[in-house]
Image 1 (cartoon, rainbow, N blue to C red):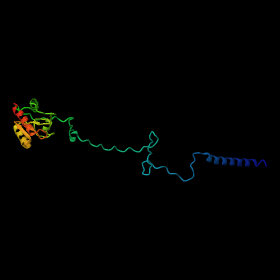
Image 2: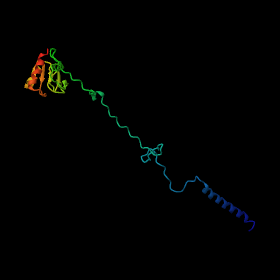
Image 3: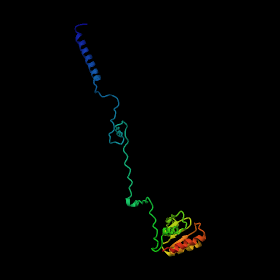
Length: 202
């Protein structure tokens, strides 16, 4: 190579170096836009095709559904509409029997008079409860039953007379007192003795 060709060779090397430098600079630039087709930006949140927002997870990690509205409360009727509560008494009230007339002897007094006269009155038992509505409902004031005769005392002579007629020949009446032999085994001959004792009472 001659001395004259040296400047030409140097100029060629400089041109090649510049060309190589320009090509490598474009490849090393990170912000260079790609040459492919352009990508459209995501749609705005206000557009209809926007993706709905995700439900935030709860403390347990699972996504909680939206809370439903509370059910309407059922109205409670006023206390007056329910009515008062009625309570039955623990024990029924005692039966109140009508009083015997002031001048009539009591059933116990008649039975005691039979005993004093030597007449039999075994197993005497007060059955005055039979006078009320829970018993026979006869409306009497006192009743004492024995194995020989039953002594009834009524509040008035009219009631006593009505019952004596109903029992017919199985009874005897003096005033408001009626002797009943229906459940007794007293012979007819012995009944007259009981009736005489009753007539002697004042």
